[in-house]
Amino acid sequence: MSIRRLALVVALAVAPAGVALAQDHKHGDHGKHEGHAAPAAAKTTVTGEVLDLVCYMQHPATGQGPGHAGCAQQCINKGLPAGLKVGDKVYLLMGKGHDSIVDKVAPLAGKNAKVTGSVIESGGLSALVIESVSAAP
Image (cartoon, rainbow, N blue to C red; front, side, top):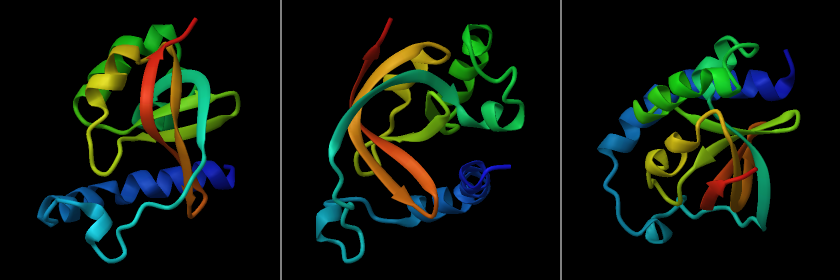
C-alpha cells in the first residue's frame, strides 16, 4: 500500500472523531480563531472522476467508474467523504471552511468533473478545497 493510500485510510478512520469535534465547535469567522487559519495555497484547475472515497478505498476495482455512479452518489449524499481521481492521484474534496460539498459533487459521482480550487496537504494527504465544480467531457 502506498504512503498516500495509507494516509487516506488513516484520515478516513479518524474522520468520525473529527466530525464529533466539529459538531461541538462553534462555527463562525474561522480567520479570527487561533490555529484555524487556512494554509496558503495556489489556485489550480484539475479534471478527474468524482469518487466516494469509502467505496473506492474498500474496493478500488469496482468502487469507481460509471457502473458505480449510483452507489457513489448515495454514499456522498449520506455525507461520506468525496474525492477526485486525477490520473494516479486522488484528492479529498472539501468545501471552504466547513461548508458542505454534497450538493456540488454528488450529482457528478462516477463522472468526470472540472474542479477549480486550492490544493492543501497535511500528513501525506492531499485535499482540494473547491471554489467551483462542473461536469467535464
